[in-house]
Length: 374
Image 1: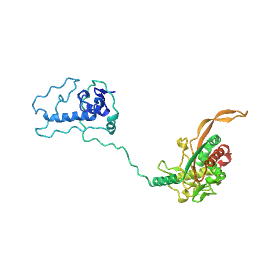
Image 2: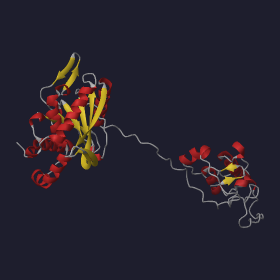
Image 3: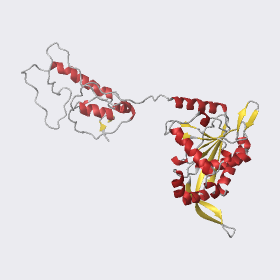
Image 4: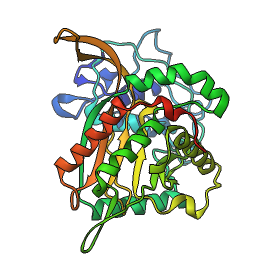
């Protein structure tokens, strides 16, 4: 911490003093409480520059150099090595490099300094003006980003977004995945994740809650009798797209896993056709692999619902024991979050649907569905 006789010294003031070999005691502070400001130091620098025009001509005796450790005052400062001829313009002061951060901190980031601090030796003058620092960059929207921005803005403007979430116990699915992981990967060429199980549970629950498989129109709710499930796919952080698994309610876990993997691969390779991205009736998004805890997605218009599945973690859970009591054990647990259009769906209805998805995940017999039917 550094302090002058007039108060605290800001970083930019300290820097100017050091660059020009000026002692703080030789500057008259005009700031609050006598604090030395940047303008005070620049005034001394300017006075020195003007004073250099009065230096003796070549051959005239120069003042004796100050003893080591002495602090020169403006009147005692040695003249410039290159004194201009009579009548010549005095050389401009050396450019001063001051970062935007230092300049901003001159007023409100004062740092105290010890008294009688020795002045630092002058530094060589900078050559040329200081390079500007870029503080921001405009990243133009790509074609797909403009389309995403338009669609999401329209969704937020038109739908009455509401949200609910429930926890789901994935322990049964997690054990099944561990048992079949190697054989599945060898047979299919990709890992068996939680996503196809969630997609299958959503399709089953939509059969019991058909009003979630619908669109809001002027005169009411247009309910779809076939489930065409949209799966949000991240395009390597360059946007997203929602390809559609058509007639998803007729597929088991293995078939859904194959369809989802195929659509995701073709989406990232830009090989999707028009039929692959149209006709969706409900959407599932899966930010869970990134460690999310609770995601609130925006509805994919004209649908009335989108379900997010967040990361699955092993956590303590309370379960009933055989003797009628309860015990603590460790299970794989995740969160299911449903964004829904409150214009056509009530909160209780949406919550019941989300809870039903969780119940199917926890209780369904998944083993028979791990063999593809197609």
